[in-house]
Length: 216
Image (cartoon, rainbow, N blue to C red; front, side, top):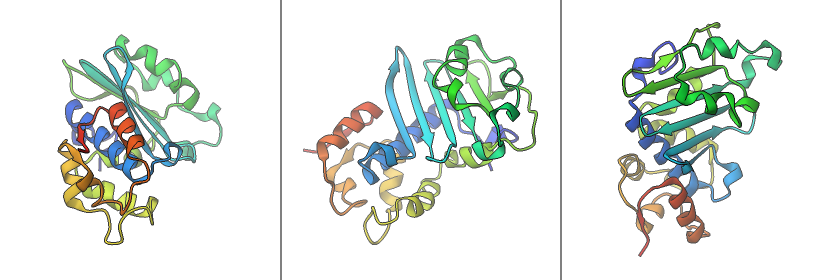
């Protein structure tokens, strides 16, 4: 299972970015109300920067910044610590963090969220971490969605979005097409949900994600 102990299982930056967009698209189809989604993606976070967020509504969060030449992942597993004062030292978790990621990791919203693990990659390196202070950091749970298998998302979403998809379940074929970046069509959407309330909202979401679609 992917974790800070097994970074070799984490896909490269490009594949990770593709997965982040895919699961955000699927969430946008299954929940048109943003506040009930787990995954969201903004392809215009800042100049030459894109952003993915995971939040479960119970305190766990994962904030991911994609730059032109790298990526950094900030994870926070709230259930591991009773008080923020008990959190591992961020300076150690981010030891040798490239300067290009400092503003993101030490600024907002990351600073307010908290950090139990931090992972980064640049053009010159494989995935890196700082100094691990604790055996458990929540990374195995938060990072498992990135195993490149759309069935992993389906298994999770089947429970989380129960009742939001067609009776036969979220189809692996459609999820696989979205994982592969295939242009989204109305026909594909309607293999996931029986009816979509607001197609304009979905277009807005897809534009924010930066995912191709054709609803004509």
